[in-house]
Length: 448
Image 1 (cartoon, rainbow, N blue to C red):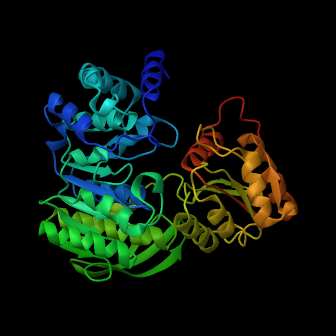
Image 2: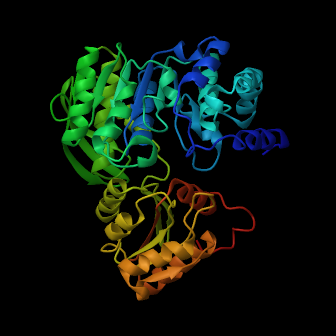
């Protein structure tokens, strides 16, 4: 990392973090006006929901590229490097390009900062979103694929009008900003629907579906619904992923290999196909395009096997619904016996609910913590875990590399069927991935 890039990241990190938001589109709208409205330079597929947004965006991106289109994809948060958030043609922009985009827009950001709209300068997420729009306009791209950061109505990505508004499953999360009921959260997320949208709805509970459909009806826009207009018909576990059969606008299509595990990922893939079809005016996607697109899908830290002996799987799951899905996927794809857990969570998450889900699947829980100001201290997470697991099944190791070493020792002692699941937060998954896949010289001797 160059000193210039490090300085720019430091400047961005001084702004309000993503867990501290100013619910308004005024600041990002003001900046877009100064930049010449780059968010309108290409059609937009926008994805909101609680779980599955990022992976659905990745699959949509791959399908569009398989059609010969140039894509810009914006996702959050990042695992290791902020450059990951802004991808062009499926690849994160380079640090040099990231720095160049910042230098281009920095004077305009300063102008908006000076206005202190609603009493605050632009937040870090708003600035990063603006950088994505500027990068996509400069490329230029044919389609923008935007993952909503939080909510929908006032999320900075919503300064763009979505031609396709995608809803992955909605559940309780970020209740301090979005509301503490499903219908309140769904109402915030339904704010991404514009008068020109085609709405694509993955399977939802009744409350969320009713809110989204009501908003779509008010806007008078078309809707495609999982189970009615598209569906996952079948799936079979395969080496390195699964083979799926789906119902799409082109009818039933089978023998599609998806290099991801689990029912949730299969359903995300079907939703992604429906989104691409909606962008194309409802025309079915060529099965050859699906095969090519799915083959290019890479979704880091989604039940990703990062080490073979002992097997270590990492995942970004952090709320009850996501954790339940990950646990099912790990059981199906890896069948660890026993499973050792390395867990860290943010203090504002539903910790007791998550630990209750984990307890029946994990023989020993190694409680640790991610490097984040929001992270629950390992000692406190361990205390909460002891109340659910009992003291004999919980180990507290504050330092993540040491926690991984401890889990490896436990797995080695347990025998050849044992495996490790490392999960509980995006920050933890990113830090673990960096340790296990791209170790620094000081980490290389660790028994990972």
